[in-house]
Amino acid sequence: MFDLKIQISDFLCYCKDRKVLSEKTLKAYSIDLKQFVQFSQQKFDKDVICSYISFLHNTYKPKTAKRKIATLKAFTHFLMIEDIIEINPFDKIETSFREPLLLPKTIPLNIINNILHAAYTEKSSAETDYSKRICIRNIAVLEILFATGARVSEICCLTPDNIDLSNHFIKIFGKGSKERIIHIENSDVLQILTEYYEMFRDNIENCGFFFVNKLHKRLSEQSVREIVNKYAALCNSNIHITPHMFRHSFATLLLEEDVDIRYIQKILGHSSITTTQIYTHVAMSKQKEILLVKHPRNKINI
Image (cartoon, rainbow, N blue to C red; front, side, top):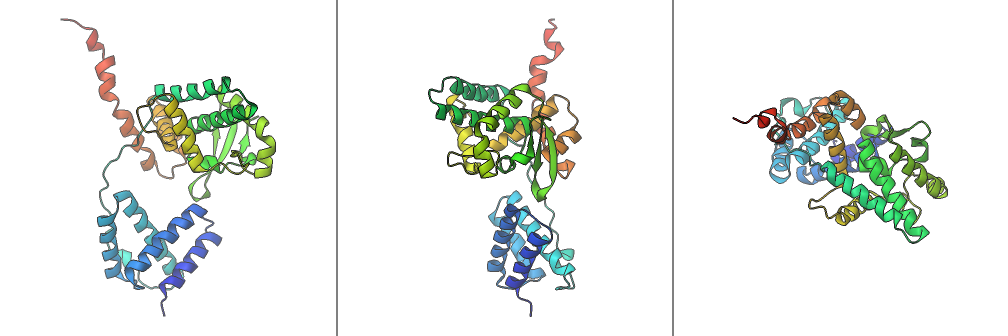
């Protein structure tokens, strides 16, 4: 007898042990499939799946609905390869839909400059060794966010073995545990990372992660958000800034410097060039400003 809950449990074990997916992905799969169980009442057929897809589109934003459908497709594929079902119900279900184009939010370069300046100024005026240590840690986090374009979760999961400052690169494990190497060649960034590492060496080795908090444990994603919020407030930024916006800004600014999009794709760790191409729309959005201010016709008076 087909038991949906048992099959989902087996699927999650398969994803963990054989596909070696990250804890974050496993958690998302678990949440999505638990929701499907509650909706379907232990049924698994074309009609139930179609109703569920309609429910997702009526309840969630397109990006979330798309992710939840992808989870269900992955589970269905597992059922097929394990010969638990003979016919894939998705073969006769249309799941493609037009998503609204939501351009990633970026941080103007002058505001990034102000944020870093505020952090370095705080460091130079620190009155105690403890406050100076925290400032150095915060600057290192901000610098690596902008220097690498890495996701905040990737930065928080860095270990000492992932960092090679003598050869100027870090090793990042992204979605699906895919590995990528990112070089850091800016001397200021290398200097602050080296200063941070020397100051926190014992804490880092005991913790096992490169970025540590005041309790000498792994720095959390929420702590990074608080760091960004702190310095954005200090420089009186009038826009809400998140750590992920450093990633968007990194990619967009490289495009504006005429860096080939395929290099940017590799640095960001995107499996598809389509994902990276969203930044071309952001770069194009500056076209009006460029033509308004820089066009040589503006120098001609008749």
